[in-house]
Image (cartoon, rainbow, N blue to C red; front, top):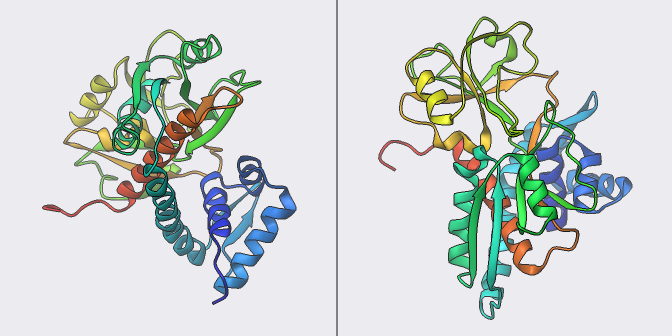
Amino acid sequence: MGEVTVSGLRVVREIALTGSFTAAARLLGYSQPAISRQVAAMETATGSALFLREGRGVRLTPAGAVVMDHAGRILAGVEALHQDLSALDDRLSGRIKLGAFPAATAVLVPLAMARLRTEHPGLEVTLAEGPTPTLLRQLRARRLTLAVIGAGAGLPDYDLSGLGQEIVSAGGLCVAVPAGHRLANTDTVPVAELAGETWIAGSGTGGDPQFQAWPTLADPVVGHAVRGWPARLGLVAAGLGVCLVPEVAALSIPAGVTTVDVDDPAWLGRSTVAVTPPDPDAETAAVVAALRHAGEEIRHRRRNPARPGT
């Protein structure tokens, strides 16, 4: 095996999360040829192809999945090294006003805030929950330091001109089903398996992106439409239907409910994005990093559930 580099691991990770060389290049600030060179170098170093090109995107090969799995841990270790060194003289302090859409406040944002309390005790983070249009207005008016929003297929094309953006989770959507459901013990299901299901949909006002049925299903059956997540998941637990859940909130599901991922080539996906002023300061950058780590932790915990008693 040749030399595996930190930059190469970072490139592989971003491509895997976004499903696109172009998107990874944009997020990392690389040119397209530079991204391709990094991937080629990593494939030479590992002696294996890491991605399969298909349609408008790419997916990991089995070897790529192994590299991706190790990349998360290695990059987290490098980040921890930098943080431990920085902590020797951590001067980050002040107040951070963090706004987030409701699903992100279930798990993602609390995990990030807990991390910040440990790593940067001088930062005081306050949380505001609200619909995305409101969060973006407050960010532009400087009533928020940064905002966490959903972006991607099926959501409005929000005006983010002049603002900084960073994907903190590319987990997208999963489906919550009752624990005794025929799909409950399956990690990933073909989208065709969802045909005929009764859906518990979201309803609300104020510009919230609402979660209806799986986006590519034709003529889905909606059994109930309720505003709050507790009501939606309560109806699912009672066996009255299934519902969409963003992966960033999947760890918050109650007893009697489980989540499954969906294999749907027609679905372009969604991401959770941290939106900041164009030149975020060190304090804001620390919050974005904590959100990104929280997104990685959610994905790892979903794919590696703890055994009973652990």
